[in-house]
Amino acid sequence: MKLKANISNKIFTFNSVKEVLAKANEVKSGDMLAGIGAVSASERVAAKLVLSNLTLEDIYNNPTVPYDEDEVTRVIYDGLNTTVYNRIKSWTVGELRDYILDSDTDNESLKQLGRGLTSEMIAGVAKLMSNMDLVYASKKIINQAHCNTTIGVPGTLAFRNQPNHPTDSIDGIMASAKEGLSFGSGDAVIGINPVEDNVETVAKILTTVKEFMEKWKIPTQNCVLAHITTQMKAVEKGAPADLLFQSVAGSQSANDAFGVTAAMLEEAYELAKVKGTGTGPNLLYFETGQGSEISLDCHHGVDEMTMEARTYGFARKFSPFMVNNVSGFIGPETIYDGREVIRADLEDLFMGKLHGLPMGIAPCYTNHMKADQNDQEIGTMLCAMAGSNYFMGVPGGDDIMLSYQDTSYHDDASVREILGLRPLPEFEKWLEQMGIMENGRLAKRAGDPSIFDK
Image: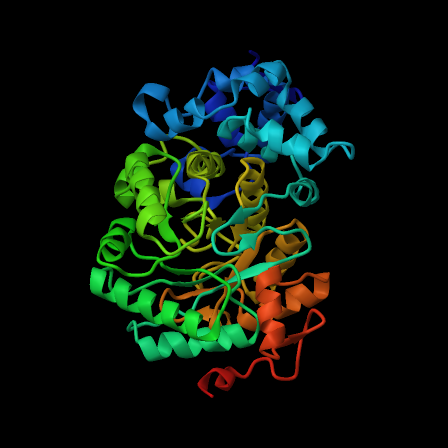
């Protein structure tokens, strides 16, 4: 295993596969903050060159966090399809990239391939790709899942209706949810982040949204994004939840900080099967984001992109209905500007999809980042072109509870129209029955939430 390269008559030597992966990463402020990123463009090129010549077996034999020390690593390795891995283990990372980008490599081939790749392999090949490469590769991969409806249907783009409220006002939440639905947003899920993480609040929101869905016969899912243990207690007491949510990370220590384990997620899934209101079989919703492990000082010297890939390796064990990243949510200490967040969005979409996940994206940013609405919209359109299963729908694009910027309800409609995409089939039929949509486009009635007050 060669860990050195000569660039412009200067020899760069790396001490480990972990260091190669970190130095080969595109510029991310979190990696620089942690002191593990490349210090020059030449060093980055040298690391990419070394990485391209490593075999998949080299990476397999050198997990970035040891198997005996980390539950995430164990989940990734224990779930690997060894038949597929043994067939391709002699490939270099460069050869893997060529195979993925070959025009003859189709969806089924990539889905089978992904089962034989560890998360570090997937991160490694993404580091050798340009933005266009990531869009092209992501577009090929189609991952579907079913809760009450089926997400990921070709030719569709779904949205999470996210009617958060800074005081958990039920009237405020429902007013915002109605506005989103009137724009055709909400076929992925009506999902609310509560301010108060307690059983009473969670149960009240779940019940109110579910009763509204039943009254108007809306084919979608409900979810309240409290800690998963709070949701479980609410469901045990009879609250109607279609999906159970949890944030997850790429190291055991970071998951410990989130208060979550693999056993806990398995327990939540079993509870959702028995007492939840989702049809299934996919009953979990995960959110992730580059930089969370660095912000928690739980990165083990691993770059934030590779840690994000490991998060997807952990998530795929549980066959979720939805996964999305919020890589721009933390702030400039992990993702500094618009260029970095667009790159992270494309990396995360590709890595999640190659892991076999029904991947969505939240191309978001905070107001203390060096990013703006144009950056956010560029990321949205690129990820839509790349086949994101869904985006967020936030009133005005401004989440007044979480204080960050994301896709708005009207952005949702615009992206569908620009790319000729449709809502999920069951939801589109409902929109047509409500007079909100006609022939795949919003009708004159759209955008008027008062239709739900009659």
